[in-house]
Each structure stands twice: as C-alpha cells, then as structure tokens.
View 1 (cartoon, rainbow, N blue to C red):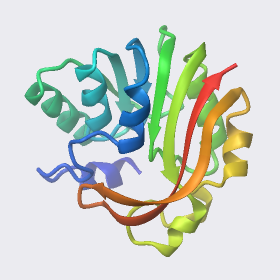
View 2 (cartoon, helix red, strand yellow; view 1 turned 90 degrees about the vertical axis):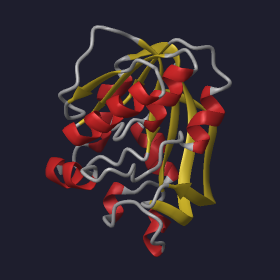
View 3 (cartoon, helix red, strand yellow; view 1 turned 60 degrees about the vertical axis):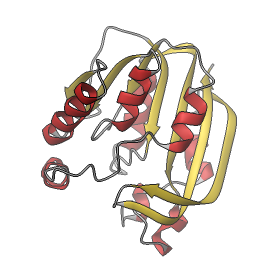
Amino acid sequence: MKEFWNERYANEEFIYGTEPNVFFKQQLDKLNPGKILLPAEGEGRNAVYAASQGWEVKAFDMSIKGQEKALQLAEKKSVNISYDVTGVQEFQSNEKFDAVGLSFAHFPADIRKQAHQHVLGFLKIGGQVIFEAFAKSQLEHTSGGPKNIDMLFSIDEVKDEFPQLEFEILKALTIELAEGEHHKGKAEVIRFLGVKK
C-alpha cells in the first residue's frame, strides 16, 4: 500500500488538488479552532486549510511523498503543520484533540474498525469527527475510490464502527466531485459529523 501511494504522489501535480475537501471545509468553518488530527492526510490539502484557519494541526500518512508535498504546500501557504509518516495503527500521540478529520480515508477492511477506534482514542469527549468517504455504490462510478467493495462504506457500517459517536449529520448522497484529477465526476459518498460521547 505504501508503495502505491508513494508512486501516486510522486508527480509534481497535487492529484486531489490543493483546496480542502468541501464537506470538511463547511464543517470546520463552524468550529472554534483548537487541535485537529488528520489521519491518511495524503498531500495535505485539509491540513493546510485547517492551519490557515488557526487550528493546531497534527497529520499523518504512510506515504513519505505525501508528507513532502504537504510540507511544500504548507510552506507555500505560509502555515505550520506537524506531519508524521506512519501507519494508522502505529500512530501515537500524548495529545488529545478537539476534532478529527477523515476525508476519503479508506483503510483495509481487516483493520478498519480497529483503526477507527484507535484514532478516536485521541479525541476528547465532546470532540467532533468530520467524515466523508465513498459508499459501496461508488463501484458504479469512475470518479475515484478503492475498487474493493469491502473498503467502501454503508450507513450501517459507519454506525457499527463509530459506536461512541452521536451523529449530528449522517447521510448517503450523490455529489459531483471536483478534487484534482483523481476525484472528478459523479460520486456516491457517505458524510457524517459526529460528537464523541
């Protein structure tokens, strides 16, 4: 997996663009800045946006190429982000975060539930999770996402994998993606905003 992402991020272009995910931006803009954790952050578009809005950002990804581009983007936008190269289950921090952003973070099916639980362990009680990922019906489209149905989501799976969240928003919808070359066109997604109980 690491090799796949290093290869994908090796090009000069930002394959998912440099603007933040639309749903992430909408929800983040409603919150008071604090500390945010961004797993599987890739090329850093959400991390850099959050930092520009006054958030203290901790991001990580398994791809060193993703980290390089994220730090490049942060420098270009004159913001600071902290970015580790690590797998989701290996990530560790002594900090507790006010928010977690999961944007198209599709972990392998066999570790996914544990990965989500691990990440939520770093979230404060009352902290918020902003989530968007591809739904199982995304397999019908060519606008992005894994081709393995077990890595895609259903509403029931979300409820099962995030039991300690109170959902303020939880919906499946069809959207038009315009996030660089690799997220483009009609897409089926699941979005949620959840609060840790």
